[in-house]
Image (cartoon, rainbow, N blue to C red; front, side):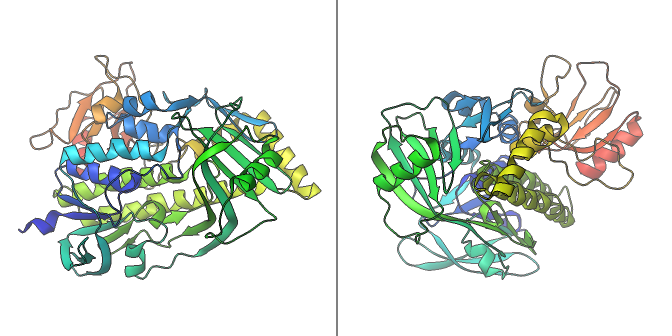
Length: 480
């Protein structure tokens, strides 16, 4: 077989594409990342928060300690008014937000992908794409203006909201603009805010401010009554004034290193897969920045898709496994659109009845534990579960926490390298040919349940009691 029968082309080198490329290369799948921008990590990116579920995924790849060392932890955040959500009770060892600019995340993920053997082609733009039963042909234009074709078994479009890949396969991107003329800037301040993440909305203005740790603060603000085109000039005075109205003061903003204006859409592709082409991250879904869920949702897309592509291309699973990517991630994307949009609409309420409704909802979340836990589970990503076949064990499809294992280890440590992990009290050994894909562990406690954990940390199969024959059948079905 030629190399292209096992190759993946990832279009886009943002966090989603980088995590995907690193996972595939780690699994021994030849992967090429095509990026139209010049090589270099930009400090002008918009995302700046990693949530608990993303940090768990980083931990399963041995990266959590590195990002935690350069980020800043936030144990509580305020949505609007007096509603403050405490993260300390999250059932995760990462019971906090990590404030970390997107470019720091990209540095870590790019290095990992390169070390694993991923190839990068910068200043290379996709100009066309066709697919057939055997693979995908991608037309590209290189930095010298010359054109060529690349061939791969699968292509993943992680190339953002204006995805060339999505357009090439003819997928619509239905939705609408929610807020226009949002201003974005990195500024220095003379007065440090009292909180790590400062957010509020008053009347027609909202703003939030967060430090990057390099002497600059990111400010995002919006004036409902002043909607201008994205290319309209942005002045520091305008940002100061909007921030003063929303937060009560402008913190002495000065020396901006960049300023821009953008609009925020709510859109989602109807399908994340068309044949051998798949979409991930902002190419599949975009939403408002409320809740800081955008980068995190894309990274979770990549974690879900990467092990499935590796299983198919390494001959351990049928191509139909890739259909579960749509079944599992599309509903999550839809929920994120709704939750982030709801936060923005509640924050910008101005009619008396909508303000009253927001106040009642905030009080409800503040006093009703199950509702608060559900809201936190959605925002942080730890509350999602995937569909399970009828008759499955109640654990199937659930996120498996970083449980303690016999011998002093943890689940996330056992998962490293993209492995399945079987946690069982039964005397089972991984068969020949599975050693590098399946770790067999025992509970640190006297629990008798057997759980097969997927490489993305969700339960593929479980049983309250299982003999070796049942375990082998489950391993054969899921690990291959």
